[in-house]
Length: 188
Image (cartoon, rainbow, N blue to C red; front, side, top):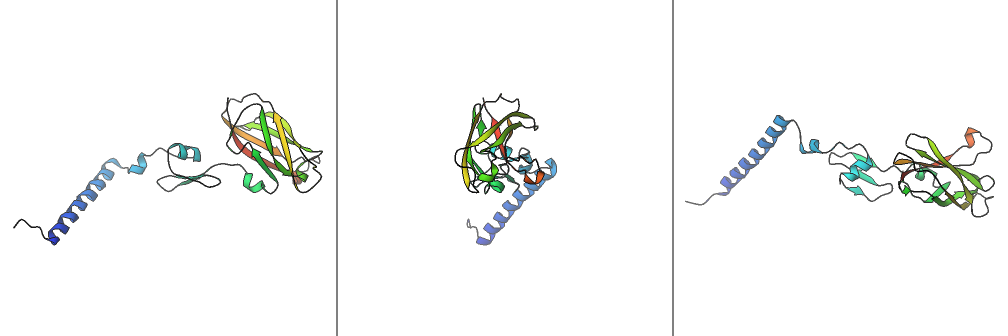
């Protein structure tokens, strides 16, 4: 007499699930939002990572929000230029301070008279520091040549900017212009 049949258990389980679905539907109808809607508005890789969403260990890093949107870390044009110029110090999105030390390697044709121009810009594109990188080996080659630069700069107001390593272009012709653009953050 006190036993519940399998059919009755199935009925009670179905009834319980129906109640949960009905309550969820009622909450969405009454409040007009889902749990994902309560999440902060994410518009960049940095915001996604700061919100604690999963970051894929890849290059560049990638972060996915619960609603399926994917944000990719800005590394400038490092991947597109890696067969021409490679910056080992600083890396994209590193915090840079003065004096700034640059190290890397570039194809010999990136240089002219063993150097090429380097500049720092703030977020708005205002140039606030200019210098040059110097070849540390024979630059009259098409192979990679190590370079180094060290220069002092005044701390900008904004927290982010770009480091730009330009191919030296003594002709001034636009078809010979090229640059590696690396996003950086400014520290104290």
